[in-house]
Every structure is written in structure tokens, then in C-alpha cells.
Amino acid sequence: MSLALPQASNAPVRALLDKCRALTQAPCALAFSGGTDSALLLYLLVACAQDKTQVLPLTATTPLQSQSDLQAAQALCARLGLTLQQVPVNPLPKMAHNPPTRCYQCKHHLMQSLITHAKAQGCQVLVDGTNGDDIHCYRPGLQALQELKVISPLAQAQITKAQVRALLDEVGLQAFNRPSVPCLATRFAYGMELNANLIAAVGKAERQLQAWGFTQLRLRVHPGSVARLEVPIAELNAVLTHRLEIIALIKATGLNYVTLDVEGLRSGSMDELL
Image 1 (cartoon, rainbow, N blue to C red):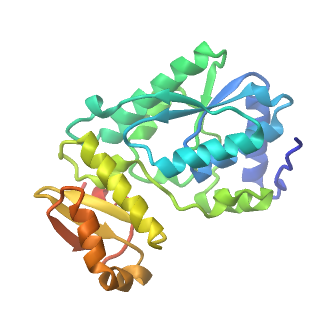
Image 2: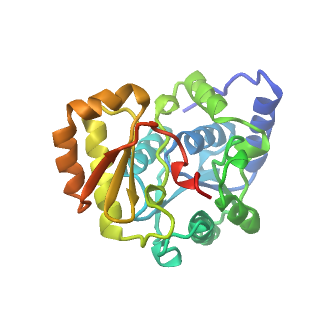
């Protein structure tokens, strides 16, 4: 199957395409989460490769992973004629008390596991989907990428999240409009013990809320068995309209108190106190 490349309309896109062509001169592995950034990279790597078997998509299956991302990853690999290789990884013992450095500990463990798997499959290079916006945020995991020499073509070409979505749209991938789904550990206040059962329950509750029509949301958990629900400002009234069902859903996770954050959905709200 021949894949159309996006127009090399500006310097960042040209740099990205050049990087993808260079990476596929030898077998390379991609840390493929199924999110928008890694979806674009997988498509471009396959489109640039003379032989798509040079590209090995790997996903780390963990208790912190969104099931929707895994399903999206499997679907895109199937469309591109690739087999997604799943690498089971459990980072929870490394970050059980959820410290502010959680992201570093988790990312280092995940990427080291993927690198080991990739090398066993003949790939000496691991690529990931860190984008140009990520390097300006509080992301301790970036240090792990640097230490392990993981290559981030989007960040190197200074491709922003908005550009990622535009490029996905240009090449006809529906992933361009998928909302971001950060790791489920981000739902828990720093210092709280990370419990696999509660993590799974929070993820299940979020999927149900999405099934009820909420476009994006975060179900944050705070000490004292407190849930703080973040939704876009435009959907605050919908929470109040369906508050009894939402209360019942969230309390079924084992949390006792349900609150609505009237400041609305925002990325990284747990980092605001750091």
C-alpha cells in the first residue's frame, strides 16, 4: 500500500520528513501509544520506509494505560499492515508512592523495557512521539528519554500538537481529532499510594462518562477519598443535569466524596502546586 506524504510546506515539516527517511534506513522501533503524536510518527515512518518491515511498533501494556489508546494503536497497525507487539510492563513498584518524579521513574522503566525488546528484534533505535510543545511543560520523563537516547523526531523538528493534528488530517487519519489521554497515574495527587484496583476503577469510570457524551474529562483523586471531576467549561451544566448518575458511578469506584471543578478541564492540574 502506497501512503501519501504530507506537503513539505515549511521547515519543521521538511525536517520531520528528512528525519523519518533517515531513521528508516535501518530497522527502527517506535514506542507507539496509539495517541495522536505516535500515530503520526508511525504513519510517516512507514510512508518513508522502502520496506515497512523496517518499522517495528511497540506498545507497553501497563495498568496505567488507557484501553482506548491500545485499541486505537491496534486499529492503525492493522490499517498499515503491521503487527503491534505488546510488551507487558508494570511500573507501579517503581513509583508506588506517586512522587513528583513519578513520570521520570515510569518513563525510564517503560522505555528501558521497550529498548530491550527492540534490540532483541534487531532494532538498535527507539523512537517516541514527544512533540515540540512537550519540551516546554513540566515533564520529568524527558530526562529519561535523554538518558536512554530515545529519539523524538517531532520535538527535534519543533512540531507542535496543533501541527501534529493538522498533518494527521492532511494524510486522512481520523486520529487528528482524538483527545489527549494521559497516563492514568496523572489522576492521582502526588504522594498518594498508587493502587492498581483503584486505577482500573477510575479508568473504567472515565470511559463510562465518555460513553455518556462528555467529550474530554479527568477524574482526579485526592487524599481523603475525594474525587474531583474536570470537564470542559461548556459541559459543566451537563454534569449537574446528570449529577445523580455521575455520583453513583464515581462512588462505585470506592471514593466517598464527589466534587466538580468549576475551573474546568485543564492539562496538568495536579502539577499546579509544584
